[in-house]
Image 1: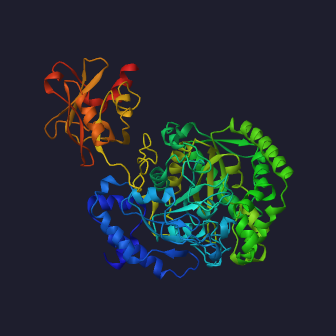
Image 2: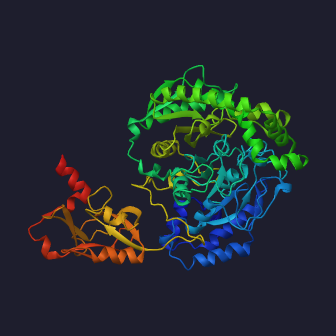
Image 3: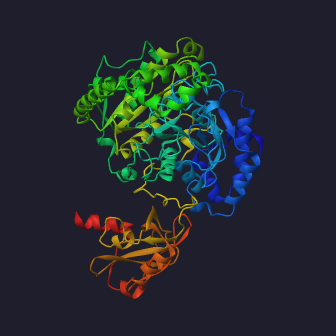
Length: 621
């Protein structure tokens, strides 16, 4: 690949995956491009630790033994914020005196590697995740991807800038008060802070343990969702266990019926930044063109809840998380960080209970407002500052940046930060969509539709968003990889395409689920099949293969079973059904249901419906 092609190559997941599947690219040159982009970058403060080139190429060699179709993140380079454990790499939380080298990666990292992703290294951050600016690190001030005189946002500063500059495809951050959203806004990225519990926080240095979330920076909404699907696992050993994986099954909300709440006039604060105000008004208009209805709501309970995070008793939880280190090695901390965390030692038990009561009151008032809307539309940050300004006034300016973000975890919400255009000085502006916990799917379709309507380039790269295929970021259901085994390896199995009564929601689907079958994807066959409605109970379709040019692409679901379970399933398939080999539209070959041709004599040809559920729906109407 010549120098021009290397410069133009977009590392977004969809682009790389298509190139891997077609054979146009292999992993080694992609890693070489990523490393060259990192090494020639002049901005400071992005990385703390990087894997050796030899280690990365060895990982690429191992991937060469695998089929890209079997790994959703095959060959995708990513980075990890340095408060999340990666085996063999130091975890510093941007404090050298705190550093340790874990033997095991955090669960989210292990899942991503198991899905085929390659960890390039650890990124810089505001020390102990105490800041929204990206300047509070002994490893250097992280500079904005568009103008090095401006802040990158924090605390997940290096993660955001590395993605924005096209050095990696995605990055993990953490988000307690907005650390996974504010840097996204300042660097023209998508930042997804999922429902708490969807991503395990085991192996994450705590900031405020009851509120911490792992977040994802991506170039598109689809990329961020794909990463979270791969990383998600119900983790009973985490501090706040919650099986939130069902969020991806709730993808039936239609964008034209979504009600987007915005603060009442007079409640929107930009701290004198007219450019930010102009861009937010434009974003509201753009959301309307995507079919959403705008409603005004009372933002005061959300804003008052936000004030509790840094001006209330939750400071005590931050102090408690690092108490031993603070009490013995406080002099090793970044001065601003030390000042923030030491405030927590003066919080009394009475203060804590008063704060909990106050938050409950705000939660009740917020619930009234949620009845008026499906999503809350806000600026991600009210304005942006230069590094010099933040250094001169670190506390007040940092607090302003959390005006629209601090409440999200306190009120148990999910949020999606999105690009929203550029100011006259060339700096990005961003908006966020917020929804109550477990409604994450409501964010995806509208967020992706909005991003496409905005257009522009991906991050700070030359790649246009318009070059990315317009696919839905939400699958029909969540094709979660299986839980990790003791060695971090997923359970491999045999893939089976089902076309009728074994589809999700149909009467025989339980025959798959009782064998612990895993849903992989909804897709279509190659156009060489016909579908018939058979006279059976329960009603079933019959799929038969025909000559090229005579068939139709039929909708199917692909499931994966362990070999023993597959054998059990096949043994119980009754005639006239049988299990053969089906060709999918992608060209992949899987096992699947086929029907004895004799059984279709006299049966209705329903191929024109292109799927059993479409046919059943038409019959019902």
